[in-house]
Length: 291
Image 1 (tube, rainbow, N blue to C red):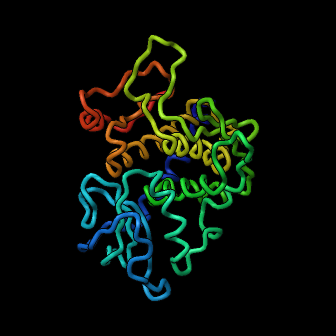
Image 2 (cartoon, rainbow, N blue to C red):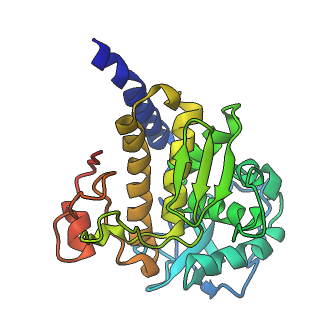
């Protein structure tokens, strides 16, 4: 009975994430062709938001309007990418440098009204931080536009939870402290360094955006799902599910992340998912994460 009680919270949390994701509308339906510009163009064709519903997101490579071999971002009006409303980039960092100027010209898009603004203001900035609240903000927006069906909801849940999150940058490995409600993020982390120097795993390769999604998911579980009362395995299952979702989305949408593989579990000793290539590893991955 005690064991069953310990798992009630994690199970409800996973069901909550699944329910929200399923009820969100997939904006990828009903695409039409569009002309693509590079990141130098800002506004394209002006659309009035009160006349047409507007959303923004990164496209999958098979979608109309996506540029082969490039990360493609689009303004979507009534489920369609209109003419001059898609832009391609060589990397997410390039998009993050471009986005402030673009959204400054978008009608009725106020940065301080978007989910993620409050989180970015919780960052403790100092000379050694290596990241400003503005830089963090646009990386949070990148997560929202990469995964509007799930991760975007977790970001919003954090802000409406009523809790206060502390964010600090670190030169060590990103992690979340449940006791102090503090998120530690390394904006330069690209590969996990195992405690055992003899270990070598392909899944150790990561990106700062992946680790940001992982730590934010821990914060969501803590502040929105009463994570303080859960054990470490349940916490990690929630956060690793989010991490692998973003790993897969980046693998599919961003050619710069073509070598990213699924993370099989929390412990550094977990072997890679079987497969000689990242494609085979994702094909063999079954969505299960272990502690």
